Image 1: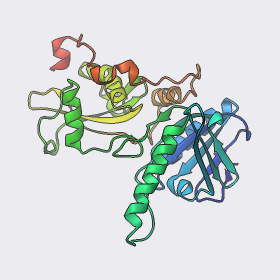
Image 2: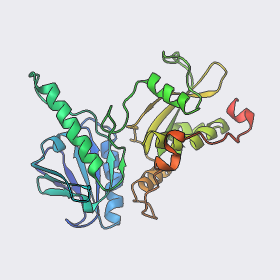
Image 3: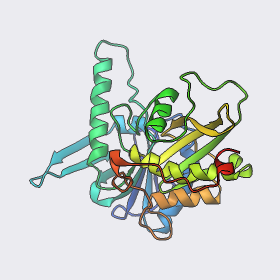
Length: 291
């Protein structure tokens, strides 16, 4: 039985107070949170550890925060949530799905307080010594929060085909949804049933594209352009993960070091070459890229 902290929604799953710890950070209305909690809690217990599932209000109502820098320039953090004390040495990985801080009230200082909390949470996430999927970005707490046209621009800059217009594709245009999970990219459950060779270029190229943006998790929507090619339409660093089949679950667990090898299969940005990144060379036959 899960033990609940005094803060709303904090759920501890199994393990001892000194064993390895995984965190799931999410919003209260995140429909993927409960399926993810069940999946990750079982895997964490199998490794003698525990999962702590924290909705945003639990973080905002923490009893005590400690953020300091030691003499070597390393940031040390500790967070007290009811009976739970989150210290860096126990953490193995964090699955971060946080949105902007939601503070009650409409007084004049509310916007300023929200910015303060955004800065504190960003700093805390950056201080953690374990992989954070996805880390905070200046535009969002779990990676860049951009409009569809922003994502199309990023794809174009990276040399990937993108929908050429700032307006969305017309209604009814065929689409496919792909999920980047660390070093892997898979079509979602529905799209996998209609998998065609033309999508193999995208499943090969997208993990490095996501890593270029410092993202381990990314949902990408493709659509057909006027020539019938698959091009990037939009993306989201908080993928919808309510349906996890065996392949998606295995890829997710591998990202968090909960797979069989326990190392965490995340493609780091440095491996992708940072700003020098280029998409992998296209080796597919022309008919697969342009059906």
